[in-house]
Image (cartoon, rainbow, N blue to C red; front, side, top):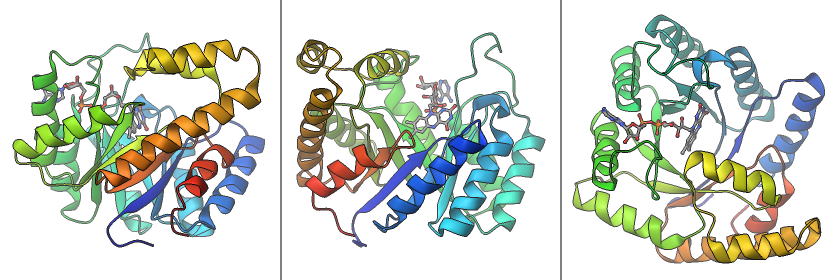
Length: 281
Ligand code: FAD
């Protein structure tokens, strides 16, 4: 695997045994591409606590790709977070993705002892020293709850100052926003790698809904083209593959230090882009 660049695949823990088996099959297929690591999401408030733990340990121990659990702080107590950190540390997990998280609606906002991701990064460092490589989230198109672009940049810097080693971005479909974000945070003294998060396009309505919720912009020209394909999934996927591949080419040519694929537990859409880019195996 390339020394300078890193490639990773993200999964979510499934609710059913059948879903879990399918996820393991996908993970084994992706493991053949020799990624630097896998990651597995965590439901804020601990809703997937056991499933995330189980999935991470299996991916790491059986599929044998180093796996980073995501851990979010809203809705979890320090004791609960500390216990999970302990379990992961004892299992030999070396990387963690530290997040604030979004509580499901109805669960309230202020629960939990840690309010923001920078506080979680500090907590992880205070509990486990330098054991974990800590990833944090970055938002080239601005986090939806940020007071302003400037404020969001400063809040990103707080996470780095608290001890983050690298960052993964929210997905986007416009390479310029990534380059601008990186340029701005470099001027604020940030030196850590900032890896673009890549969302393959496979389904228009789901993508549109998800993008609205997380503040990722689906540019009008992409939206219009996807809308025009209607139920023609094959055309949606072919167009999506081309658009995302071209964006990744620009990102890598412009110096992005790797790519992190939001797989949504599917192998083919990410692999199509991987193969188009002729990434190393
Ligand atoms: P923060 O960095 O804490 O920022 C949240 C908001 O608060 C921002 O608007 C920021 O500007 C502001 N802010 C930050 N610090 C401060 C401060 N000290 N004082 C005042 N304001 C502040 N969600 C999950 O629930 N589970 C997951 O597994 C998960 N994985 C993700 C992986 C990636 C790579 C990304 C990009 C996102 C992921 N998310 C996940 C979503 C994430 O939890 C949400 O975007 C959440 O709203 C913000 O999390 P954060 O860690 O970026 O928060």
